[in-house]
Length: 171
Image (cartoon, rainbow, N blue to C red):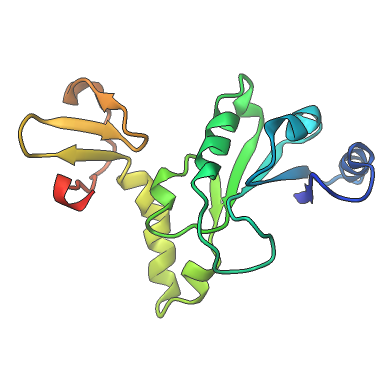
């Protein structure tokens, strides 16, 4: 996949077509702060979208910008969402990955600057999968999805494998 930024200096539509004609998969990079209306006219030309969740491309170690969650939601709400792969890059670590609902993530500093990079990769691989639901054991039993929507009953949740539960003191 070859990703192009929306603000490249060339004719973006022609570049995306050229990439496709060369037998490669074109993708678009959507950066925090850019409007969806800038991305939308090109969606029919790509199968891959990368959301850059940091304000300045090219500088490692930046923090995940909360606005990226709205961008992720926007892509996930597209009626033909299954036509696209969504990747999120920038500020991805053990704290942010559980809120990211995408097909894949890119994590630089969290992995590369770690004492044990393999451990951090494993944490990233399992955090989103196993911390999908939050459980608050005090008082009434409540299960919330990672976007804080209340699940009405435990029976309505399909649990796959074992989940890590968090108490309200740790949320």
